[in-house]
Image 1 (cartoon, rainbow, N blue to C red):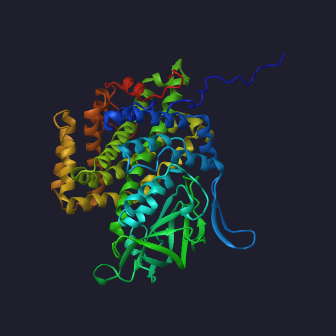
Image 2: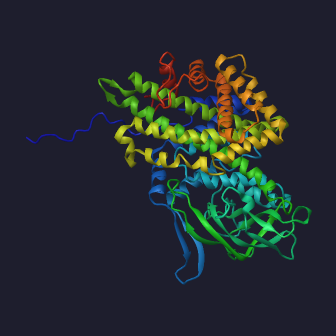
Length: 555
């Protein structure tokens, strides 16, 4: 009689076949908080549909395939003609097509558009994060193009379309279009004023040809790109940067000169193509906004993509935490589920706090975009760089700790956790790394007193609700009052502002056990240097149960 040596036991089932939206209490409650009651049923319906798709086995398979078989650059066709095309696995197109058809590039003109899009972006990114880049660029191009009403009238309906059609053709022949961005150059990095790309005017008003090299071009198979280049004129007659819209295909059907030199070999985000591109002096583009006012024109795009950095990081955190919670609910050790072990429960609760705080903050920023009042615009001016600085930085330690909850299983590619870990640093780097965000906070403090006033008004609505939050606000105000050497303290200040803002949101809106644990650990300093060091007297079980995804009625 043959011995049985390969009976598999004590292995958790995969986390598939569930509603990513409905299983996330913090997200679902936040949507209910920020969406007008008359729209709530409609919005919950569309997010539920997207959530079930994101949690499906086929979407998870698409995500794996798009990363296992990354894009390939084809510079020439078989006859030697320059084509500069990037080929993607079909799974990439399925992911992108589902996202576009779900409205993830359409926020600016529909009611509660930013909250519903931010929630959808957070849900769908959990299926695969890389294709969020063209979604974000396309969404964010709209406010920049509105600096030129004629361009906006031509392009906005295409960029907000629910139809995804890959391939390079004149946009007049396409039902929808995607946009990318190319600002960074090899000599300048985050210092866009070091741009050396040159724009020479043509006879027709607003038309130019570009010469230059862009070190990072996002989503190079997009239909058009927003780029910065130096123009001979500019404000006051001096040299300055201008913003341009550069189409891949010209109106007559010919290809614009857009030389893709290579694709970047990146740590993560491997499903998405990031390229170096050259403009050869015949590259045609149209100016967007005033000549010499390029940075001011494109800043709306940058702000919108920074919110997506916050949302994308919140999504990666949520999926990492969901995987850890799911695994430990099923995995048995020492006679009971791992999640019931006191020390593991502490780790899981700590991770869940970080995830919920990130989600609450992303939705609050989106709601400010929807309100579009002077007060809310001032709030965003301060809160966006604060949130971009902090939430994106928390993503990597959360992903790493969540991976460890799965033990050796989490270190294996099949678990999906290594892909989340590789993705986790991206949003902290993209659209201005940590120092850039912290310095942007200082810039707002010095130049825009209304931004600080709006920020303080926001957190002030929670004063008196928790003594640790009150003390943290007082400490923050002391830091703000001391301007000596403030640049060297900019990261410290941005971190403190982010934690106070998150604390104020959780005190107002989260269950008492969540708010209590956050204030005790993040604001009251009753916390170690790693996850799993929460005070054991807190309601950790309730925090874990709140965050745990449910599959087919089972935890």
